[in-house]
Image (cartoon, rainbow, N blue to C red; front, side, top):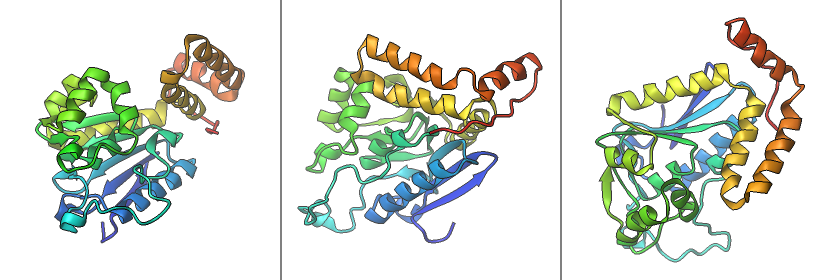
Length: 261
């Protein structure tokens, strides 16, 4: 994979983005955050990519912030443009589904970045934790928005305010992840999901549904109904709306021509 902190491989409509500092358990650095954002943006712009997987090289997903600076790891920021959400764009702004294949430990920002993804699979024995309050900071990467909407207020408070660690099996029980699997099965399972999306789902339909899913917590019932209707106006009558039905009737894989916007 080379020495880059993030690597990207694309095939069969799926881009696999790998956090690539295995000798440091993929500890997060500013360079890694910048590269991850660039990988998201490039994959989003590539019409040949239909789904994205984020995983880690070696035995961890991301062990949290790089602690090499010691006591200065969380020194006061000097730049006016400092942000606690250092990956741009975040995964929820990518128009394609983003799957976190949490193949091993995901701690601190390693877990909060995974929470920005649409689907999460986790190694059942991986150690996870929003440990920020045990390091003198607090959860980041919009996690006070992403985590409560995934698991509810009470569970988010338990995880955030104690900073306790837990394993992948509990993560699935809590709703942090969709499934907990043996570590060797996490990436293959994510690839199966991504390839199924790449073949069987219409790109524009997925992009609009994802947009509405992420917006829905702050919308009321009538606003959701309005947007569902308006989005249907965008997709109904298109070649893909016809192709999806014909492919199902003819028992073949669809040939999509639409693009997300």
